[in-house]
Image (cartoon, rainbow, N blue to C red; front, top):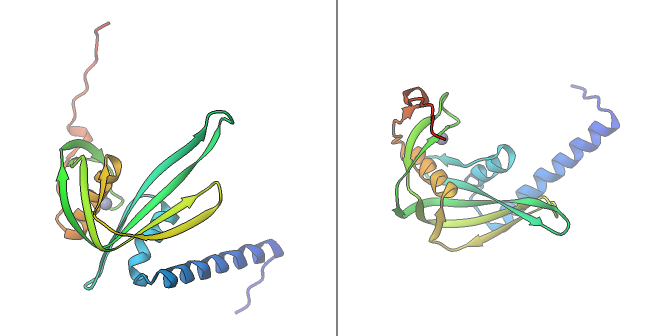
Length: 184
Ligand SMILES: [Zn+2]
């Protein structure tokens, strides 16, 4: 087989291969089970929260976005923090929030109930920070349990449901009622 590339395609491919090698090296350096890192790669490449399960391993990655905005310069960047839990263990939940959610594996949004706060521990926890300002992705091992609130808590609850294989059936948008508010 022959592959013909122009020079810019060649440079792009070379950069991509180098990036993949650096990724592999970082995973090795942190000594994470390679398969356990998959949800992080999905979260970085496609966005959102992901979970992954084999007979030996469960892994869950939850993404939080934090915008750092400098009012004086009127500019900033959004840091993405992906927290990876290898063999996660739910320590506790607090509160109940009704919300519409769209799962990647489903066609429609569903009305579900999620906890407002969750506390999660795991055999291994790695925090990955993607900084579009410095264009760096840093990995840091940390110890649990960790507490999450709001969006991240909903995401964790959603992914844990996938891992446990017991998905709640919610109500759909078409079960809502429209109401015109005529008050002034
Ligand atoms: Zn889902």
